Each structure stands twice: as structure tokens, then as C-alpha cells.
Image 1 (cartoon, rainbow, N blue to C red):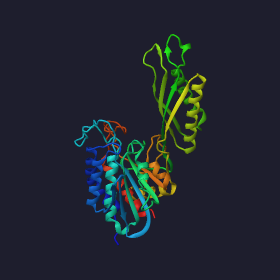
Image 2 (cartoon, one colour):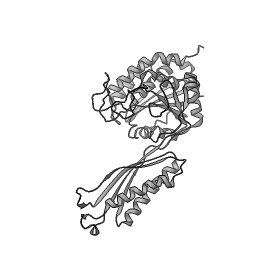
Image 3 (tube, helix red, strand yellow):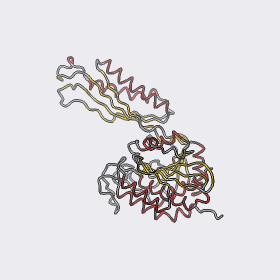
Image 4 (cartoon, rainbow, N blue to C red):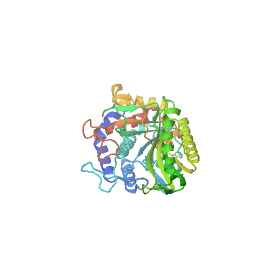
Length: 394
């Protein structure tokens, strides 16, 4: 049997990947409101020859199965495809005009997974087991992965492992044409809090007749900064950011309430739990000490994204098969950004890898910027690594 040349096939497919990406890019959709994108994905899968497609009927996202000719385990490969509610300012001929924008690379992720499907269909004789392609909406708000899990994405058949990628410029020190991997924690848990301090309003000239919630908020914010610097190991990573403080309407009025909102980021379950406990204790105790009370709302986002060592060793090997070892590098530091792929990797061993897609010039802007764009010339690498992994991981 002739060997399936994954690299050559993927390189030849890059033009198609670009077309798919540009089509998705031009019609960005947000959250679960992704009907146009999902129809496009389903239609393209059918053109490729994929027949086992699960979509609709109350299910969120698109799931497709590709079965090899040989017995084996079940691998999930995931890509997100939702956009952001922001106006694009790239000036590209295929730029979106509907008030939404693909400013985080998800259009490229969807195209790369479609390419993976096409090449796996062509390589079916060499594929062991089953590949479950998972096209996921609503990553940006962290709701897509839990919804697909609730809908049964890990069932019929159950997964034995999962991989995915993020393209763009999230991690520095890379250039296009390379690929990045990391063992262990790659991205942070991302949680959110709202604390409303309740007091007793009154005239600014008679503060002794009031219970000042703005003072409570200020004290709490100051003390929260001490948690990371004095209670978390310097060798660990943690963030407590208070992003908004809202209280009062006039400079001579002491408001009856004041609300702070913010985010907590962490790389381990233990630190995540500690930060939440300390947030609750500090805000409650400060409010009580200043004769008020605190109402605390805590919203759990994605957990830390932790790459399984064995799966990541195999991802690294697949990268080196495609690019050679000189172009494959370990991501030196995790990012404190969140990623709901972590929900999938809590369930089964997985690995999430990095595809640098920068230009190396003034066209490079950060993710979530209205001028964000990606270097389309390297999309084939993402497809090639995914296909090579699927053919070699067992």
C-alpha cells in the first residue's frame, strides 16, 4: 500500500483552506446564533463525502464521524467557529460587514478542520479506529463546550482522546512556519465575580450618618491585591483583576450601594479554589467591619487547560514528522487567557497546540483587535499535524 503523503496533500490543499476560511470570515456569527456557519460546514462535509453528520434536532454544534478501515480507538478533533460582536476594520476584500468579526482565528480553525476531514477521507485505508470531528460554537463566552458535552458529544461512540489547536499570535517567540506544544498547563481557568456592597446612603457632608459602600469597595479592592502577592506561591500563577467599580451619581452624595466586577485566573484547581474562598472572605469581612454587607456572585468559566503528557508527546512527534524538529518548539509560558477546550480535556486525555500565523510586519495585531488578521499561507500545517496525529497516535 502506498504511503499517504500527509505533508504534500496538505500543502496542495492550502488554497481550499483559504477559500473556506474567507467564506466563514465574511459571515461571522456570535455565540450559539451560528446557523449560516453551521449550514456551510455541513454542506462542505457532505461535498467531501462525510455521511455520518450529527447536527440539529436540538443539538448544538456539528459532529461528524470518519471511520477507518481498521479497528481502533476514537479520537476527537475540535475546532471552534464563533466570532465576536465587534466591527471589523481590516480593509480586507472579504471583511465582514454585519457588525461581527472573526478577530480570534476561529474562521481559520473551522477551515483547518474541514481540511482535516477531507484528507482523512482520502486516507481512510490507513486510518485506525474512528475520528470524531467536533465543530463547536460559543467558545468566546465559554458556553459551547459544556453545551456540546450536555448534548452527548462524548457518547456514541465515547472518546478516548482529543486534540485541537489555536492559530494566530497568542504565544510570542514564534514565527509562521513553526508549531508549538506544551506539557501541562497551557491556559488558565477563567472565572468572574460581581460583589455588591450594601450600606446606607446620605449626604456627603455628614458621612457619620451613613454607611459608606464605596469605602467598603475601596478597602476590598486593596486587600484583594494582597492575595496574589502574599498568599500564592511565586512559582504559581494567579490573577485577580477588578475591572469595574460602580457606585454613586453625585460628588456630594454617599450612595447606598457600590458594585465591583472582575475576573480571577489560575493554572491549578487548588489555586482556583483558594482565590474564590479568599475573595468571598475578604469582601464579606470588609463589609461587616464597616457596618454593611456584601452580596457575592461567582461565575465559573472554563477550568485550566492542561495538556496530557502522552498525548502531547504524540502531537510533538506529528509536528516533527511534518515540519522537522527545528521548526517545532515548546511554548515557554502558559497564557492567563481562558479556553473552553479545557472542558473537553477534563473528560479525556487531550492536547491543545499552537499554530503561529503571523506576518512578521505591521499587519500583525493582537487577538480581539478590529484589525486582526492571520497569515493564511500556513493553514496547511494545522491540517497536516491533525491528520498525521490521527494516523499515528495508536
